[in-house]
Image: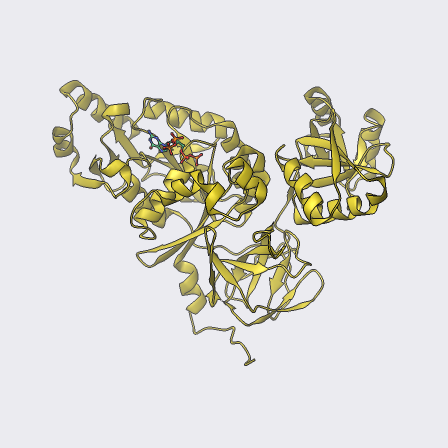
Length: 536
Ligand code: G4P
């Protein structure tokens, strides 16, 4: 095999980086994420007529050989990667499961994205799931761009939506477009950046791009169906908003403290062309990640990347496992030999793939921001670093503290070893948190997840992959927090919660709570900073 070239011509990497946007969509189920994703593909030129993804969502039973549970339930358990190119920009869209029970996977996907697109239903405002996901964006300080969807339906007034975002999320909401007409009368948006009114016409139930007429404000209002009083009210509203977007502090936006807000309807394609044009300008190009020494790893160094997701059994025939790697520096090339930072093992990148939903294509090269799908040789874990040349290690994926708990025992008492080994592996893969039962005996373990449906994944995978059928029984725990390696803190908590301090399967101390009252009392006793929601 010839030596693989890893350096590209001057400015090569910088040029590739500048032309990429890697983002994830966050939303509460039903806000319209699937519809908007599909429409972005339509406007991005990746598909010519919308309908296929939604059909696939509905016909998942038949169409996909995805995980069995996903088929049984007809929901999306796992995140996939979608890609499109428009006007010289490569967009990597990291799709995330909509079902609330699979939010942990969504959390990790956000770590691999450079910014988030937040979709909100105009009638419901910011919902619970979005609040949680936003916390991860805040943790990572990534910019969030908001799309207020379903403006063709009755909902909150636009000013009310902005207040709702600010109150629920503590960010400054900066309008970038403004809807004209509400509900059934919704006919377009005023572009507060380009200062033009975009009036739309519906077509073919939104399967094709909507025809837009771009007009100066006054002329546009005259051509709209708004009556005189409504036009005057519209002018007043615009005056009230003023030039907020122009005055937006870019630094605040880059840190996720201010979010530009666009209004529209994904179903009818209203406001999407305008949104995508500005999204290109607003969304940042891939940024360097911090290595485990806290230094920013230069994007132009040799290839490096980290695993943000492991997906087992994408093809049940082969019992395979796919690792999704976010490229963090340099050029990735098919055939190159890289090292796994965890153990120094050398790996030849013989069959890297790119994924478009569930479709795979052999991949020749990839650059920072791109996602490469690799066959997992067995020793990848969530967060593993791969590199070429100079060693580097990233430690960017935290574990999220569980909210649902079950006690696990083996149905067959002679299979205790399989129980422990199987669960340990699933814990390393990031499917479930595994703890010693406080004061328990060795033949049972405590499982914790962010979403309750994840227990079904564990049961299913233990049975099919580890040949160990398990019994899961409910517990009284409702929350958990990891503890710092500080004897004093641990002693203080043990004094109050002697029976609830335990260790995870890797030996890190953790405290379990049976009520919010107990959790709040602990916060008062040792401080929030000593009760960790995320474990690195
Ligand atoms: P999700 O992925 O966030 O869960 O949401 P999804 O896109 O599946 O949309 C949820 C529902 O909201 C769908 O209706 C979808 O058609 C509808 N929807 C999405 N965007 C808009 C919009 O801009 N305006 C209106 N009025 N509706 C919108 P459904 O009845 O559940 O499904 P379907 O019968 O349309 O497939």
